[in-house]
Amino acid sequence: MAKKRNFSVYLLKKGFNATNSLKDKHKLSPLKEEGTNLPPGSSLFYSVFPNKEPWWKGYWGISQDIKTNSANALVFLPVQDRFFAVSFGSAYHNLKDEAYEYNFGLLCTLNCLDPEKIKSTDILSPETAKRERIQLPNATNLAVFDFNKDESILKRLTGSVKDEFKDLFKSVTGADSFHFSTPCKPDELTDLCSKLLTIYTSDEYKKTFQIYLASQQ
Image (cartoon, rainbow, N blue to C red; front, top):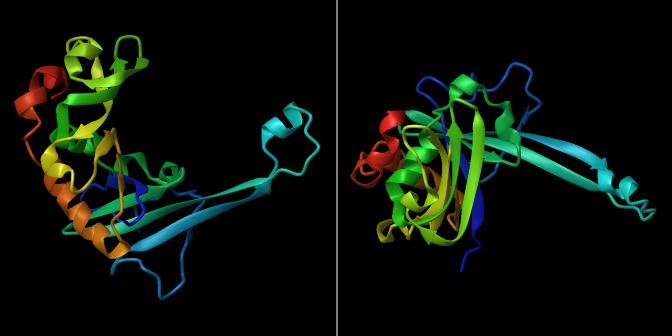
Protein backbone atom coordinates (compact mmCIF):
# COMPACT_ATOMS: atom_id res chain seq x y z
CA MET A 1 0.00 0.00 0.00
CA ALA A 2 1.32 3.45 -0.95
CA LYS A 3 2.35 5.70 1.90
CA LYS A 4 -0.06 8.50 2.78
CA ARG A 5 1.35 12.00 2.78
CA ASN A 6 -0.05 15.23 4.18
CA PHE A 7 -1.07 18.04 1.86
CA SER A 8 -2.18 21.59 2.56
CA VAL A 9 -3.85 23.13 -0.49
CA TYR A 10 -4.90 26.70 -1.27
CA LEU A 11 -7.10 27.72 -4.20
CA LEU A 12 -5.84 30.86 -5.89
CA LYS A 13 -8.34 33.45 -7.06
CA LYS A 14 -8.90 33.81 -10.78
CA GLY A 15 -6.06 35.72 -12.40
CA PHE A 16 -3.46 34.62 -9.84
CA ASN A 17 -0.64 32.16 -10.52
CA ALA A 18 3.04 31.65 -9.75
CA THR A 19 3.98 35.01 -11.30
CA ASN A 20 1.83 37.27 -9.12
CA SER A 21 0.84 35.34 -5.97
CA LEU A 22 4.05 35.64 -3.95
CA LYS A 23 4.77 38.59 -1.69
CA ASP A 24 7.24 41.14 -3.03
CA LYS A 25 9.90 40.23 -0.47
CA HIS A 26 9.29 36.50 -0.32
CA LYS A 27 12.18 34.22 0.62
CA LEU A 28 11.53 31.39 -1.82
CA SER A 29 13.70 30.38 -4.78
CA PRO A 30 12.34 28.87 -8.02
CA LEU A 31 13.33 25.28 -8.69
CA LYS A 32 15.25 25.09 -11.97
CA GLU A 33 15.86 21.35 -12.03
CA GLU A 34 14.55 19.43 -15.03
CA GLY A 35 13.20 15.89 -15.16
CA THR A 36 11.14 16.11 -11.96
CA ASN A 37 7.71 14.62 -11.23
CA LEU A 38 6.04 18.03 -11.31
CA PRO A 39 2.88 17.98 -13.46
CA PRO A 40 3.00 19.93 -16.76
CA GLY A 41 2.60 23.68 -16.31
CA SER A 42 3.36 23.61 -12.59
CA SER A 43 6.26 25.25 -10.78
CA LEU A 44 7.94 24.87 -7.40
CA PHE A 45 9.43 27.51 -5.12
CA TYR A 46 11.40 26.50 -2.05
CA SER A 47 13.55 27.66 0.86
CA VAL A 48 16.04 25.76 3.00
CA PHE A 49 17.07 26.93 6.44
CA PRO A 50 20.62 26.04 7.51
CA ASN A 51 21.38 23.75 10.43
CA LYS A 52 21.07 25.50 13.76
CA GLU A 53 20.79 24.57 17.39
CA PRO A 54 17.24 24.42 18.81
CA TRP A 55 16.56 27.01 21.51
CA TRP A 56 15.90 24.35 24.13
CA LYS A 57 19.47 22.99 23.87
CA GLY A 58 20.89 26.01 25.66
CA TYR A 59 17.86 26.33 27.88
CA TRP A 60 18.47 22.89 29.38
CA GLY A 61 22.25 23.24 29.36
CA ILE A 62 22.80 20.37 26.91
CA SER A 63 26.37 20.07 25.61
CA GLN A 64 25.73 17.35 23.03
CA ASP A 65 25.82 18.51 19.41
CA ILE A 66 22.16 18.83 18.35
CA LYS A 67 21.16 20.69 15.22
CA THR A 68 18.02 20.88 13.13
CA ASN A 69 17.17 22.06 9.65
CA SER A 70 13.97 22.60 7.72
CA ALA A 71 12.77 23.12 4.18
CA ASN A 72 9.56 24.73 2.88
CA ALA A 73 8.01 24.71 -0.58
CA LEU A 74 5.09 25.93 -2.64
CA VAL A 75 3.93 24.13 -5.77
CA PHE A 76 1.74 26.10 -8.17
CA LEU A 77 -0.50 23.60 -9.92
CA PRO A 78 -2.70 24.52 -12.93
CA VAL A 79 -6.16 22.93 -12.73
CA GLN A 80 -8.78 23.77 -15.34
CA ASP A 81 -8.82 27.60 -15.47
CA ARG A 82 -7.40 28.07 -11.95
CA PHE A 83 -4.19 27.54 -10.01
CA PHE A 84 -3.76 25.70 -6.73
CA ALA A 85 -0.91 26.39 -4.32
CA VAL A 86 0.23 23.27 -2.50
CA SER A 87 2.14 24.27 0.62
CA PHE A 88 4.78 22.27 2.46
CA GLY A 89 5.96 23.54 5.82
CA SER A 90 5.36 27.23 6.42
CA ALA A 91 5.82 28.31 2.78
CA TYR A 92 2.21 29.55 2.62
CA HIS A 93 3.30 32.64 4.58
CA ASN A 94 4.85 33.84 1.31
CA LEU A 95 1.48 34.03 -0.44
CA LYS A 96 -0.20 37.41 -0.80
CA ASP A 97 -3.34 37.63 1.31
CA GLU A 98 -5.37 38.72 -1.69
CA ALA A 99 -4.14 35.84 -3.87
CA TYR A 100 -6.21 32.97 -2.47
CA GLU A 101 -9.82 32.15 -1.62
CA TYR A 102 -10.29 32.55 2.14
CA ASN A 103 -13.20 30.13 2.38
CA PHE A 104 -11.83 27.40 0.15
CA GLY A 105 -10.73 24.93 2.82
CA LEU A 106 -13.76 25.49 5.03
CA LEU A 107 -16.30 25.03 2.22
CA CYS A 108 -14.54 21.92 0.93
CA THR A 109 -14.67 20.49 4.44
CA LEU A 110 -18.34 21.38 4.95
CA ASN A 111 -19.25 19.77 1.63
CA CYS A 112 -17.55 16.42 2.23
CA LEU A 113 -17.72 16.14 6.03
CA ASP A 114 -19.98 13.63 7.77
CA PRO A 115 -22.09 15.99 9.97
CA GLU A 116 -22.06 13.42 12.79
CA LYS A 117 -18.27 12.93 12.78
CA ILE A 118 -16.81 16.33 13.69
CA LYS A 119 -13.72 16.25 15.90
CA SER A 120 -12.76 19.90 16.46
CA THR A 121 -13.74 23.47 15.67
CA ASP A 122 -12.11 26.89 15.71
CA ILE A 123 -14.62 29.62 16.49
CA LEU A 124 -14.13 33.38 16.34
CA SER A 125 -16.15 35.89 18.37
CA PRO A 126 -16.14 39.11 16.27
CA GLU A 127 -16.96 41.44 19.15
CA THR A 128 -13.96 40.41 21.24
CA ALA A 129 -11.73 38.89 18.52
CA LYS A 130 -11.48 35.87 20.80
CA ARG A 131 -10.64 32.64 18.99
CA GLU A 132 -11.40 29.34 20.64
CA ARG A 133 -10.49 25.80 19.59
CA ILE A 134 -12.69 22.99 20.92
CA GLN A 135 -11.64 19.35 20.55
CA LEU A 136 -13.71 16.38 21.65
CA PRO A 137 -12.48 12.82 22.25
CA ASN A 138 -15.36 11.36 20.25
CA ALA A 139 -16.66 12.55 16.91
CA THR A 140 -20.07 14.22 17.09
CA ASN A 141 -22.24 16.88 15.41
CA LEU A 142 -21.71 20.61 15.39
CA ALA A 143 -24.50 21.34 17.87
CA VAL A 144 -22.52 19.62 20.65
CA PHE A 145 -19.76 22.21 20.25
CA ASP A 146 -22.21 24.86 21.50
CA PHE A 147 -21.76 26.95 18.39
CA ASN A 148 -23.88 30.12 18.38
CA LYS A 149 -24.29 31.34 14.79
CA ASP A 150 -25.50 34.77 15.98
CA GLU A 151 -22.41 35.48 18.08
CA SER A 152 -19.60 33.45 16.50
CA ILE A 153 -17.99 32.70 13.15
CA LEU A 154 -16.81 29.22 12.25
CA LYS A 155 -13.18 29.48 11.09
CA ARG A 156 -11.88 25.91 11.04
CA LEU A 157 -13.37 22.44 11.11
CA THR A 158 -11.90 18.93 11.41
CA GLY A 159 -13.63 15.59 11.04
CA SER A 160 -14.22 12.41 9.05
CA VAL A 161 -15.71 12.50 5.55
CA LYS A 162 -18.87 10.92 4.17
CA ASP A 163 -18.60 7.46 2.66
CA GLU A 164 -18.74 8.83 -0.88
CA PHE A 165 -15.43 10.67 -0.36
CA LYS A 166 -13.48 7.95 1.45
CA ASP A 167 -11.73 6.89 -1.73
CA LEU A 168 -10.11 10.36 -1.75
CA PHE A 169 -9.37 10.90 1.96
CA LYS A 170 -10.60 9.75 5.38
CA SER A 171 -10.43 12.89 7.50
CA VAL A 172 -10.00 16.55 6.58
CA THR A 173 -9.37 19.96 8.09
CA GLY A 174 -10.55 23.15 6.46
CA ALA A 175 -9.91 26.84 7.01
CA ASP A 176 -8.27 29.02 4.33
CA SER A 177 -6.50 25.88 3.15
CA PHE A 178 -7.77 22.32 2.81
CA HIS A 179 -5.65 19.80 4.70
CA PHE A 180 -5.79 16.06 4.05
CA SER A 181 -3.70 12.89 3.75
CA THR A 182 -3.56 10.86 0.56
CA PRO A 183 -1.43 8.15 -1.06
CA CYS A 184 -1.90 9.70 -4.52
CA LYS A 185 1.13 9.90 -6.79
CA PRO A 186 2.46 13.16 -8.29
CA ASP A 187 0.76 12.54 -11.63
CA GLU A 188 -2.56 12.02 -9.83
CA LEU A 189 -2.55 15.24 -7.82
CA THR A 190 -3.91 17.41 -10.62
CA ASP A 191 -6.95 15.16 -10.96
CA LEU A 192 -7.48 15.21 -7.19
CA CYS A 193 -7.37 19.01 -7.14
CA SER A 194 -9.85 19.08 -10.01
CA LYS A 195 -12.22 17.09 -7.80
CA LEU A 196 -11.58 19.56 -4.97
CA LEU A 197 -12.66 22.38 -7.26
CA THR A 198 -15.95 20.56 -7.85
CA ILE A 199 -16.39 19.96 -4.12
CA TYR A 200 -15.66 23.64 -3.37
CA THR A 201 -18.32 24.93 -5.78
CA SER A 202 -20.99 22.55 -4.49
CA ASP A 203 -23.96 23.72 -2.38
CA GLU A 204 -24.24 20.37 -0.63
CA TYR A 205 -23.21 21.91 2.71
CA LYS A 206 -26.46 23.91 2.84
CA LYS A 207 -28.45 20.74 3.48
CA THR A 208 -26.82 20.10 6.85
CA PHE A 209 -24.85 23.19 7.89
CA GLN A 210 -26.87 26.17 6.62
CA ILE A 211 -28.44 26.74 10.04
CA TYR A 212 -24.98 27.26 11.54
CA LEU A 213 -23.66 29.50 8.78
CA ALA A 214 -26.53 31.94 8.36
CA SER A 215 -24.54 34.76 9.92
CA GLN A 216 -21.56 34.11 7.64
CA GLN A 217 -23.26 34.28 4.26
